[in-house]
Structures are given as C-alpha cells and as structure tokens.
Amino acid sequence: MSDALRGLSLRLTRQELVLLFITMVWGGTFLVVHRAMQHSGPFFFVGLRFATAALLLALVFRRYLAAISWLELKAGTLIGLSIAGGYGLQTWGMQTISSSQSAFLTALYVPVVPLLQWLFLRRPPGLMSWLGIVLAFTGLLLVAGPQDGRISLNAGELATLLSTLAIAAEIILISRYAGQVDVRRVTLIQLAVASLCAFALMVPNGETVPALSTPLLLSALGLGAASALIQVTMNWAQRSVS
View 1 (cartoon, one colour):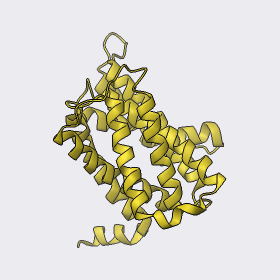
View 2 (tube, rainbow, N blue to C red):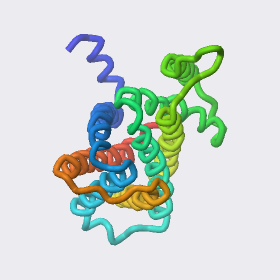
View 3 (cartoon, rainbow, N blue to C red):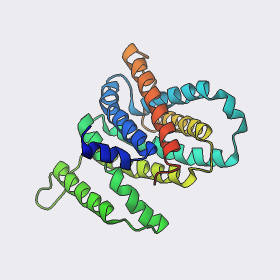
View 4 (cartoon, helix red, strand yellow):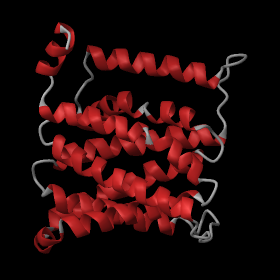
C-alpha cells in the first residue's frame, strides 16, 4: 500500500470505510434495475425489491422485533416514505434513460443534502460542500445540453432529479434519528413502509402485476439483499458520521 493510501485509510473511520463499500454496492444496482424494467413496471419492482429486503431482515433480526417503540415507528415510516419516493421516481425514470445517466443524476443528492440542511436546519454548507454544488451543477448542464439558453430534460431525467430530493431527505432523516432508535428495527420498518408505498403507487401509474419470471425474481432477490445491506449499514454508520 502506498503512503498516500495508507494515510487515507488512517484518516477514515471504520464507519466511513463501510459507507465507501456500500456506495460501490449501490452503484452496481443501477444496471440490474434497468434490466429488470424489461420484465416489470417500476413501482411493482420497487415494492418487490423492498418487500424482499424487509423479509430477509425479519428473518435475521426476528428476536429483536418485539420491542419496537413509537419513535422507531415514526422514524421508520418517515424514512420509508422518502425511500419509496426516491427509488420509485428513480426506477420510473429508468424506463426512458440509461443506467449510467440515472446513476449520475441520482448522485446529485450529495450536494443537495447540505443545501437542504441549510434550508431546514440552518446549517450553512462549508467550502467543500459549495465546491461540490458547483461541480454538480456543471455536470447537470453537460447532461441537459442547454441550447439557446434553455435546459432540455426529458421526463425520465426530471423524475430522476426529483428523486434526489427524496434521497437527500432520507439521508437527513436517518441522521436526525440515528442514536435514538434500534438500527435493526428501524431499518425493517423503513423497508416495509417503502414496499407498501411502492405497491400502492402501482394504481395511479396504471400498473398490473407482471408475470413472475426467473429474471425478475432473481433481480428482486439480489437487489433485496443489497438493499437490506445498504439500509442497515447507513442507519448504523450515520450514528457517528455526519
């Protein structure tokens, strides 16, 4: 290991290193979701994905579920609603845009988080946050391809941009309740609420239950396991990471 990498690893906490790992896992989910859209409507797939994740966690953490508190129900419900909005819009958008476009646009939640914290929590962004905001806006302009002073975004890109607000809200809410709730229980509630909301959104979107093909079920199982890992890790790590 080079001196630079060794220095970086020493500066990062265990929680930050784990978050870096799940970021790579999260990045790998976009292509799977994009391919799953060939077999399912967006909201059914999101519902199935998070139902699978909730079931897996229920099996692993079943002995801890009896002591669920009202605060955990409240926190899990609010975070679950933001997850449903974020992943639902993101997956809906992937019907018309590529997985790489979706990944780039979704990652704009990173500079959105400090902006929302400034707006609602009165925490002004630092220098590095402002730099990230400028770079993100520059990247968005490159994607949108402004012509004649106008920015052109299709419906999928707009939906994905809106999803970043929900995902940023999820990050802020997780940070808000971290340390006050049991990670295992609150994560299970989040996933269950996200699943129920996504299934409910099938109705206004005009979706029907698709044929449960092998590719669809394998995608749901793989992404369900990934989602369970990602959400548990985020809830655990944000107890000590801002």
